[in-house]
Image 1 (cartoon, rainbow, N blue to C red):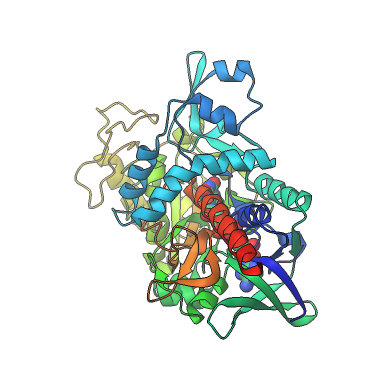
Image 2 (tube, protein in one colour; image 1 turned 45 degrees about the vertical axis):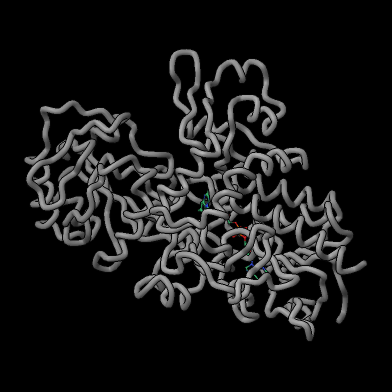
Length: 499
Ligand SMILES: Cc1cc2nc3c(=O)[nH]c(=O)nc-3n(C[C@H](O)[C@H](O)[C@H](O)COP(=O)(O)OP(=O)(O)OC[C@H]3O[C@@H](n4cnc5c(N)ncnc54)[C@H](O)[C@@H]3O)c2cc1C
């Protein structure tokens, strides 16, 4: 082979770079292979809001993650705690009890040590004031478990991790697509074939960590595993996560694991590009629908927009759009919502598919919705609103509709004050849940549930953690936790092999 490394890491997102940094602590040479060109580096990690869920017992734990927190800041916040047990319970609850208990145990107990480790390596984090806190008297109260974000969001996290790699002497090759794993005659993984700017190349390695994301950007795999119609959805992140790592691992006998027909998806601007835009990143999402109505092109409602807080419905409703005619829907709001400033920042970007009108009929015509259908639907909805119950957008107010085919449970406010605004949305996929089975050392298991020697995985391509949904912010913590685990093991095992 042309050259050789102790550890090769495939991919350059959060999971891969965490693995590379951890591997370098345990061996001499680490190579990162990234399919994307350098200007498109960072994987889906780059597109995230950088919000990270991890367990902590109180402010002292947070101060080890945000070591430069000032006394004034410390005195102005109330963080409570988010224990390992709470994190574990959340994992069980949102996955309908299906999360792999061993993986969930590793995630919930190792997320804090992993955050501390990344901090020590030079990655900086801050409290997520803009997103996970509200002002209560003279204090900001944080809630929900995911209360810390990377400085500079996803882009910042990615840039900082690349900086650490550079400092630690980790080599990164861009435009280098991993194609096939190479095995020695004992079945151990001994190298990898890549396709780079100069063509095919074989590189040998003591250990290989696959961290190349899921298959969300592969239309063929989407329709095969997620089901018919999924080939048509928009991709929120990079176009490079085409399931290559999963395929390569399955080819050498890896055990598949997890919710192959499940994924994370949200309401996404109808005219967003086919895959993510690095300047807009996550702002094509449209998450203020609990304060309005969602209708299809016939003007018909099809979900209970106010069933629960946005956090608990956005994934299910993102998917529900796919089943509507043309895979499209429209979020409708009236002047009261605008006056109360209830629309999130993402509604104000110039790249938005929006129409404003003074009558419902005009709005329907502007958005290509059936005008009679929409007028009838809104009339019926307005009549069904329980105006005797007080409206309060900050709590689940129980202000509902009664007697409709699809009732609205909370925040049911009449749509009767111009201007009327509508936003056209479709399904945008974030990431897939199915992948390969790993053990508690980060090694990929074969179908006899034995580790495949020399092969490890981390990040989105690890199966078994998320089913149906995920607790927001745990994609990144899972990536770094399992990345660190796989990298450490891969580095150590490579050194043992060398001796
Ligand atoms: C818009 C958006 C917002 C999100 N917000 C959040 C959030 O705030 N918090 C959170 O926890 N999660 C969030 N997520 C989920 C989060 O992005 C993922 O859980 C996480 O980034 C996955 O990390 P990863 O390292 O596994 O994959 P990625 O970061 O996607 O990295 C995979 C890398 O592998 C490379 N690759 C693919 N195939 C090959 C190949 N054959 N050879 C070499 N390289 C290859 C890709 O180019 C890519 O760089 C969000 C996702 C999206 C799309």
